[in-house]
Image 1 (cartoon, rainbow, N blue to C red):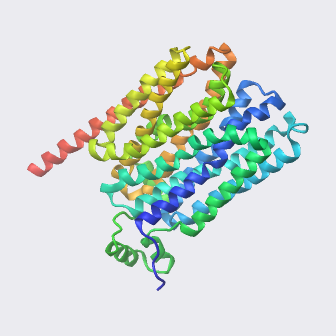
Image 2 (spheres, rainbow, N blue to C red; image 1 turned 90 degrees about the horizontal axis):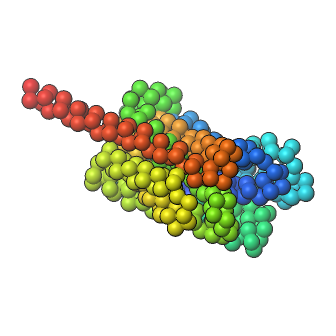
Image 3 (cartoon, one colour; image 1 turned 120 degrees about the vertical axis):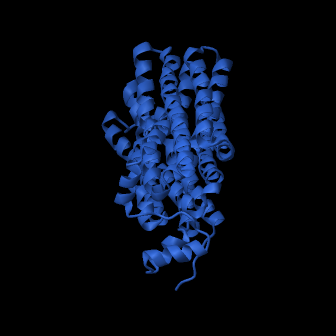
Length: 435
C-alpha cells in the first residue's frame, strides 16, 4: 500500500490556492467587457449577458462537479475545471491579440460568449473545494475551515479589481490577458502539485473496499464520509428540504456577491463618472470587505449558530441595498456598498456552516446544489440590472438595486424558517428523550 499523503491544513491550502486562481478569468473578463463594448457597441442587455456569462458556467458546473467529489474526491474534478479555464483564457488572449480592436465586430460576440463560458469554469471549483475541505475537517471546525477557504479564495476578485486598471494602463488589454493567463496557469500547476484528496479517497483509489477504507481513514482522524456515487449524492441532498432553503439564501449572498463584483465597475464609471482606476478601487473595496468578512463569518457562525448569523447578515445587506436604491450621493453610495459587502460576506460563511450540519451524508451533492444554483445569481442579476438602465437611463443604475432589497427580504424569511425548524426539531428531540 502506498503512503498516504496530506493533512487537513495541506488540503485546505491546496483547495484555497486552486479556487483563488480559478477566479482569474472571471475577475478579468467582466471588467474588460466594457473594452469590447466600446468597439462592438452592444445594447445594455447584451452587455449584461457578456459580463455575466462566466458566472453561468461557474454556477451550473458546480452541481455535477461538486457531486463528483463524493465519488472520486476533489482532485480530478478540480483539475479538469482549472484546465478548461486555462483553455478559455488562452483563446481569449488570442482574440484580443489578433482581433482587437479593428477586427472585433458584433459577429465575434457569440465566440466571446463561448470563451467567457469556458473561462468561468475556474470558479466552478468552489463546490469541489467545499466538498474536499469538508471531508478533511470535523464538524466542529467546519465554520472556520470553510470560512477560510471561501473567504481567502474570494479575495481574488477584489485584488484583481484593484490591480486591473493599473495593468491595463501600463500593458494594455493583451498584456493584461497574458498576465492573468500566466497567473491562472501557475495556480493550476500549484494545485496539481499540492491538492490532496482525504485519506478515504486515497485508500479507495488504492483498491480498498469501502468499509475497510472508512475504518482506516477514521483511525487517521477523518469523521465525515460520502454515501453513494455522484448521482446518489445529488439525489440524497435534493431530498432534504433545508438544501433548497440554503440554495435560495446563497443565491442572494454569493450570487449577489458575484453580480456586484461584475457590475460595480460599470456602475461607478457610468453613474458617478469616476475614472477606471477609481471604479476598480471601489469595486475592490466591496469585494475585499466581503471576502474578509467571510473568513470571520465562519467564526461567528460557529459561536452564534449558522441560522442566526445568516439572518443578521441578510438584514445588514438589506439596509445596504435600500441605501443604494435611493442614493444619488457618492459618499452615501460607498457606505451602502460596504454594508452590502459586510452582510454578503458573513451570509456566505453562514450558509456553508449550515450545509454539513443539515446534509452530512451528501456533502458533495449539497455543495453542488447550493454552490451551483446559488452562484447562478451571478449570471441572472447583472442582466436584470442592465434592464433597469435600458428602461430608465442613468437613474436605473440606482433603482436597479431594488433587486437586492427584494432578494434579501425573501432570504430573511427563509433564514427565519430555518431557525423555527431547528427549534421544532429540538423540542421533538427533548420530548422523545423524556419518553
